[in-house]
Length: 450
Image (cartoon, rainbow, N blue to C red; front, side):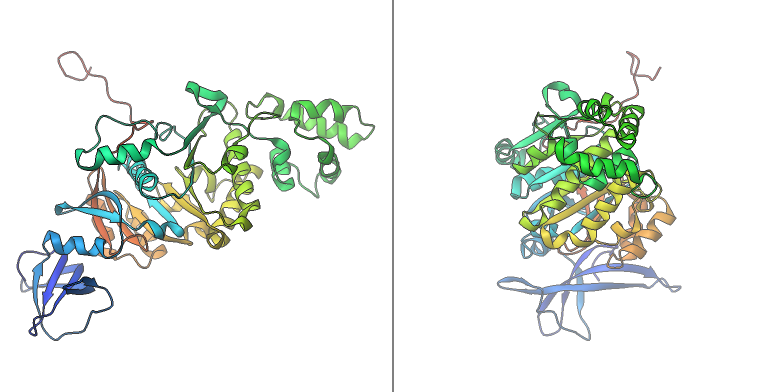
């Protein structure tokens, strides 16, 4: 073989009859006598019309060469991979591209703190906005994507002008608590929540708290668009002890102090029904720790309730452990996790597709993780995490996955249906402003740290 192969390397194989196939090295090992052996997969037969994935054939012997850039590019061009997320590791002049139509499957996006996971996710969101018409709702706990519509001055020159124009033409809505920084307010209409969701907000059990639950069940039919603050006086006017107990519960939980209630104003579900190209929900600025869960539950309930309309939407959940951790067992946590689990198991055929981003696979409930057919992994130094990823995603070449331990910031590994072959890549520069960049260490005037 000409050159030294490594995991993920693309190679060309020339058989004695002159036919050329393109392959990829999955694993490389050295024997005791210094010989090098490898394992890999055939990708396609190279012909005058391009790459034919169905034309591969067995062979007894072949000359093996490192694939040149034009050969590598055939892999992505033949699969209609148009989402340019970066460049191939070891082949910087070849774009690493994902297949847009394959986001009709659930995707898991993973990387330890400092790997560039959220920045890279921003690159992907930009490309989806530019190259597709797939609407997105983005659960954004750290305000990382609130400026996804603001162009940066650091975009790459090659395609940035065309891409910038496409981005600026997209309908991007940003909703933030209390309308922060001129954004629209992020509001929920209490009466639009499903009955189980209302019960979760009020911490009501249908059996243990059966009298209050039943009171709410009947009372909700007459409360229109009122907020909890408006509901209390009507409950207190009732002769029913259960109604007065329900009023006391609302006051004790201080629901009337929550800032997210829409009343007659525009709610988050009103916005999502309009299907903007992207709806960014800044979940991190609420004063009460449960408010972001109510927002998530409201949106997920709405999408599930309207699933039969079969209008595709990508549900992007950054820091997904906040919404679907297996360890959180308060009523609202459980309600949100169960809805996400339901969407993961049954939502795909209705056009409800998840993209879950987190630091460790163990932070996401296994029933959700097991439904993901696409995976992106950035730097992962924990052997336990790598082992779990290998078990959960059996289609991922283990030796290629192991390379993630040595990744630098911004390097990523893609596998699954949304990429034509397992791909090691360096992410490109974002075209838009990152909303939640890391805080830098302050320096003295002479450049030294204080």
